[in-house]
Image (cartoon, rainbow, N blue to C red; front, side, top):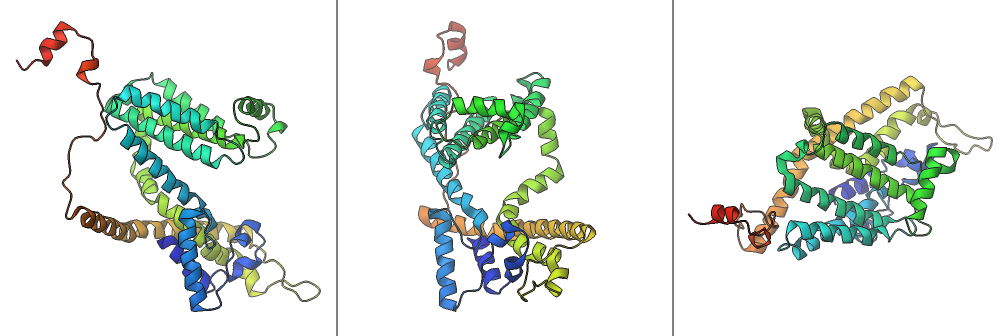
Length: 343
């Protein structure tokens, strides 16, 4: 909501005026002009805030179309955990498998709903693996296997967006996925999902990959990743566009009829400096977001939670989900019975 308010403010002070004339179609499509009045501006802000979480579209920032999928995914996690809170871990694995197959066959069209479900269910599966193995996960598989899983996952995720038939390997992948998915499915999204899932599993079982990804630089990149996602489009349409197209904007090119033509990008050196400066500004702004905006949001959530509970809720140290098999399901070994006795 704060990110939408930011891009709304930028649009209504005419900060995006240059994007209407750039030679990049993607940036030009993100242009949004000033509203005619304060009332119209406030109305458009309200519609954008609501639309982001309902219909999955924000007129001020189209890249936020995924946020409603995050909300739906959170509800899927909550309802699944609530329904399986008393279920033993092995049964929960079976439930994840059924849910996975259910979402797999929903892949018609762009497969947004299917991929949302597949990714969320696989995430719950990995969380269950963590509950099961805990710190011993990195010693479960022989050292080369997690590395192979990561490499294979990257290969699978490299399935091309278009013209898969132009290469033998991608054409084979296309036929394989088409045979196991619904008709007219965007199979690229399925390969993306499988590839990312394979990489995630490889990292989960790899001690070296975990060591790299827990280094200070990757910790920083992880902390600021979501603010970067929320603000990158706003900064592209303003800061990056200003820096890249400023020389052309100072002397706009016109056609024979005197009409303004698309602005032209600067030289390669100019582009390089602009892109480096853009990334520095973006990640610096994301770090400030984590430092100042996130704590404010956390305080608001904690205040609402405390109000709902009628005070600060007591925290329990025990896990909510059952993480071990109940004793009744274990084999009746006399030695185990002796060790489990009060004596």
